[in-house]
Amino acid sequence: MGAKSTRSVAIELAENIAAIEQWRSTLDERTSRRLVHPLSNVRRWKAAVQAKEQAVTDARKATAAWARFVAHAEALTPEQALPLWRLIAAEATIHIS
Image (cartoon, rainbow, N blue to C red):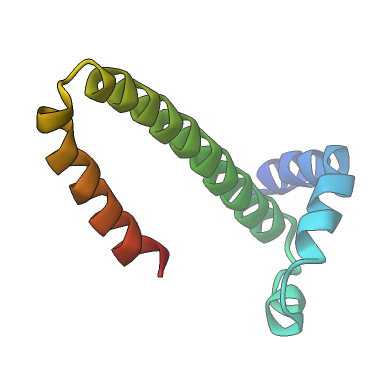
């Protein structure tokens, strides 16, 4: 990595120092000690932020899918819906416990 690249990453680190320090405070001591270069810190911090944003997006998509499912299930007759609700109850038992 050239001096210009290192400098630009150092600037990005400085601009986001509060968020990066907060993220670093969640790391174990060994990992924290190994992250000394600005590029290492910025890359790992960005990856953590992206993973968190993806989790939020996935949760929103799952919530929307659930709402669509419930709306469609409510349109079914009780006899048609019962096997689906039983399947969901069984799946929930597996995934929650």
